[in-house]
Length: 393
Image 1 (cartoon, rainbow, N blue to C red):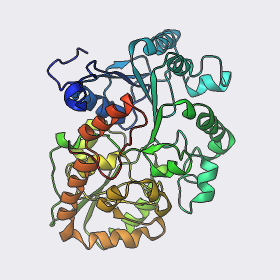
Image 2 (cartoon, rainbow, N blue to C red):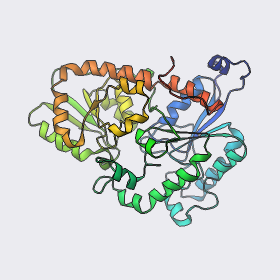
Image 3 (tube, helix red, strand yellow):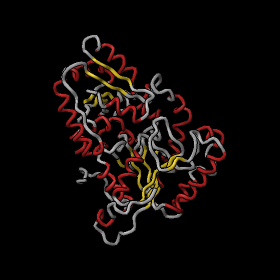
């Protein structure tokens, strides 16, 4: 995609006349929750050559500048294209920003089962380091969440029998691979970010980063109404991880006493889901993960109040100023029906909570503000990030 010469120059961003050449930034190899796409677009607007390249599309149909192959990358042509791009990337970009603990040559699950950590695994990552490129990693949850450790540390977590369907697999093999990543790959990165504060227990040298699943400034708000049937939405990507069975049980009880129009969003594309969210008066996010997910940012940007379980022992990894502004309606998994009922009884307040939620999204999930800090970190990985509050956009 051609570079837009009209966008803001690096000089305007940094104020440093010695920095004139735009940074060449590559995001990839996956687009989970639209985080890399939103960040790369904001980096472009601030003067960087910033691209998102992914191995394959997902059912959510998030955008990318280049899609290398089909889901699974099982054909020889797809794999050849992947290897060619991965190895050439450090020659074409100054910064490699990887996601979900993967580089482009981190093979799919079936391939890894057959070859374990073969000679090509992370080869592009090692090449980038050898060439002196800046290497960043954004962790998004189950890339480094240790199921066994999380189960022992947390009373309520998706990492438990009967919740996440992969829990036993994590104990038997995935935790080993995640520990290998934590011990061998992450220390080589110039900077590591994580989106869920629970990961602060596991990667203490990394930095908390707010979600950028959407640019809030591009979203038209539609605030809750205080009359008629109350529309409540929940959008699980995985029922066990989101705690959906607990939510469905509580909603069934509350429907006996309240006029609730409950919408469970499953199998929709991103654009289809957004149309459904616009009509909501309340959105229920995850009730086991201990923090809100990327979809909650979209809801807040739309002016929707969000109910979510926020785990007390994790919030110490969140900037105090951000935590002080947090508008999320906190619910507890073991008191979910009571907590949701208290929210329903506050219906007259939900419009104002929705307005505070949008203000929060504009401040703390502002793509331009976060991209401005990220470009500074690309130049100097030791730059303090997200200290106190975000700068003005």
